[in-house]
Image 1 (tube, rainbow over the protein chains, first blue to last red):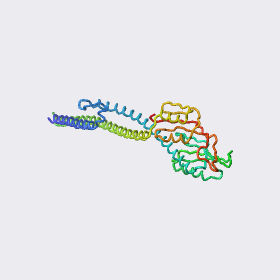
Image 2 (spheres, rainbow over the protein chains, first blue to last red):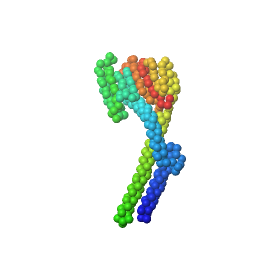
Image 3 (cartoon, one colour):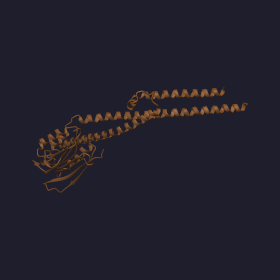
Image 4 (tube, rainbow over the protein chains, first blue to last red):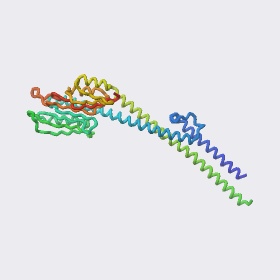
Length: 173
Length: 156
């Protein structure tokens, strides 16, 4: 009698536990309609837990792969956008240079390369006695967050002109 | 049956029942835990993807806000560089041979659009110093050769 009672209570516990946990399981899943629709499960009640679990795992793997490709696209677009913005900021700097040192320098070479560590590089001629031009140039580019290197060279075949090599380096930022 | 034996039997049965329930409980909660972890992972991925989509649309909106197509840019370049040999491959424009150019016009053209990613430009003046009175002419003086030009047109 007592043993029957104990076994009965044990079985009752088993069923109560199972129903409670099954309910939790189903309500947890049902709340996530996005997941269910991606897994192609329309109703949970008829499907066993192990089937659901394996489908969910499979979809998570697929989704992860999809996100990886998406992040590649994102990074390449971000790259393009940064390149465009760099070029525009270079143009702004160049235009402000032209208004501030107007009629004081003359260029002989200019190179811009978007992805290099030295985005801008130019060779200029200026009057021998005009060092002020250099500090204006330094200021314009360092305000934009670039590092400026100016290599002064005295020898110039032109009358009373100095010839400088100006490199604008990324990395001051 | 002695009283002692009956008591022992009752305890053994009780123990077995407790162990059975306990194991079953662990199994149920185990599957519950696995599924909730999966749901969490999925939710993370989902919100990540949502944020990515937002970024993507933001970036492409920025890129497209003043866009030009590859063929239009090619056309524009040829209109003031008639002798230029320009190759298009994929979304990229490449100048094949140096050509004489108006540097300001070129730079302003490239800067006018939001989807032109300039990979490389180099220009060289053949006569760098030109005095106007006693002043320099700003920028390139004369006879500027465009030595290289590589641009990528987004969405082109």
